[in-house]
Image (cartoon, rainbow, N blue to C red; front, side, top):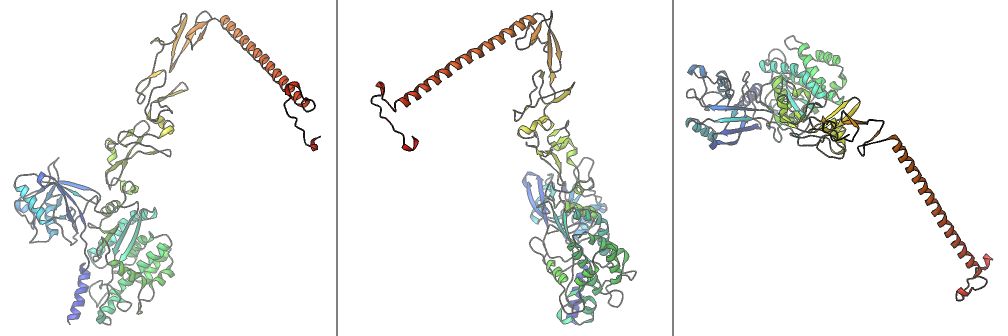
Length: 607
């Protein structure tokens, strides 16, 4: 009898979401900014209820109520309101532990207008929407003392590091159940799947996430394997069990029916994943809940097969994966599910349905599309988030206000501000395949000689009457300088210099000056010609005489060079011939001047 009671208690604990397993407290940061004596960063536990603002922060002022300090009744009963006045900081209620559940404390604080409560519980309750945290007794006593002394206590609840965000892909798991007769928990699960399906499939298809569904099963104690309870709730000789859907062994579906449908969903995912279409799991689970509900007595293999065939996944492979559920053998899929149910590293055991694990960290909060999407977005490395994480419904675009304080080129519509889920970063952009360099706050520009090719290096540039001028010079690595004929800062403007008005050109007698954009035209009266290099006017005849003399000088120079070259050539030829003749004669008769020079006879073969 005692063993049977233990068995039933085990089932009851599973139904209620409690198990004796390895529990890991998820933490985030609590930063006290005032008073000076309490300044610092403290650890606090994320509540297993309420809605943590994953990826964000919440700043407020702590209030310790004079009455109802345990928050076990509504604050309206003691005429206390925590609603912030316009322009005021949100209110965080500090409540004492005891006399009632933490969830009731949070509920009362929320109804009283609080933005957060500094207590938490590990029992999930619906409708708690404010963040909750559990702080240490010593910290709570210090805060109470500061408040009693009339000091303002400001707190910053920080969730930016509550989830790991190592890279550009988020891995998350959803521990669920095919049972649709377990009340509000089952209803919330299927409602979440329906609402989140679109976002989940987009993230999965584009490679932003890797999703894996999981299912909790328990095994029947060896002493009860042949009992009626085990036979009705377990498959494969008591290895894999689930609670009776209606908690009544005498009517409706049995726990083993739930195990088989859970196995079918797991096998569907396995086959779909092998065909590179894991996102089809969301379609199957949604359609199965609509077409095959328990209430209509359609929670059957036949109905499930019809759904599978309509989606286009190989039914034979799924049946092979399920195998024979009546035999005394292990099922590969369910055995693996039981193994991963045990926590490893920073993740605790999975004991409650539903459970969401993101980047190997258990999610705490409401099973809601918006809240879950925010939590997943918080798991991306900053600047790698997909567009869906940067939509207005999920986060605030900080680049829209004052460009986030980053560098900006309004004329070229370029900015270093990059919106992220956690805020913004100032990072020089990539333009036409060229990575701009700079600090991102005050300066960004293309490197080296390429800088003038892209947006004129951020310098002034203008085209007028078919002529283009730029203040960017290729021989300068940075900076802008107006070109000759212009004056200005070279960045925002360069104004044409009026050389005629300023009398810096065309000042010769008889010259007539006309200013042009970026230059000037100068003409001479009386048929004279203007020489820009010398800023003077000369006559056509003088120019012709000058040109003729110049030509004759060139011709005479060339003729002189030719004669000199010919003379040198003749001289060198004569000397060469003389030396050759003397060498030949020396072979036959010594010359007086070469009496002592030995005669070299050539080899006979050369005669």
